[in-house]
Image (cartoon, rainbow, N blue to C red; front, side, top):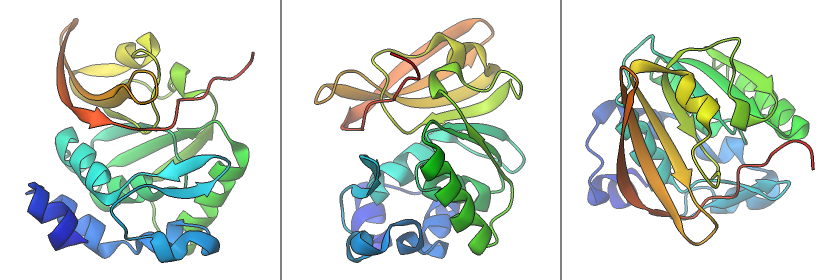
Length: 201
């Protein structure tokens, strides 16, 4: 996986490569899909959700430009794999998941692997976590139709956000960098993520 899916496609950050090499990806995936854990594609984790392919996880993590101790908000805990990658890179991680069962399962997996530095929250990711804001980095692992304004407000000046945006089959992965009150957006690549779910009707 590391050599054929990541290095071969241009992932160069050795810390990111090391984190993905260190973490047993199959541990985060339900038993019925564990044989697909290292394939070059997304894998179902239940409740209509997926774990992103290894390349996308690596690309988004590398683009965050992390350093130890940075406060990171992850929107969409899912199975907890991205949270574990961030924690392995010594980030201070807050992660939010709208589906209680997925959040509980992720908490169990992280605890069983003795991964620390991750605070799990349940709620609507469109709203971010105002009680814990601001954040140095924000990573969104499901696609809203447009960038949520609450997330922009919770990003520190000098911060970076990675977010897939758009309707299904027409999504772009965006890198958003904040300088003071200004936001610079760079399109990285076409992607296909599950939609970012909202609470309520």
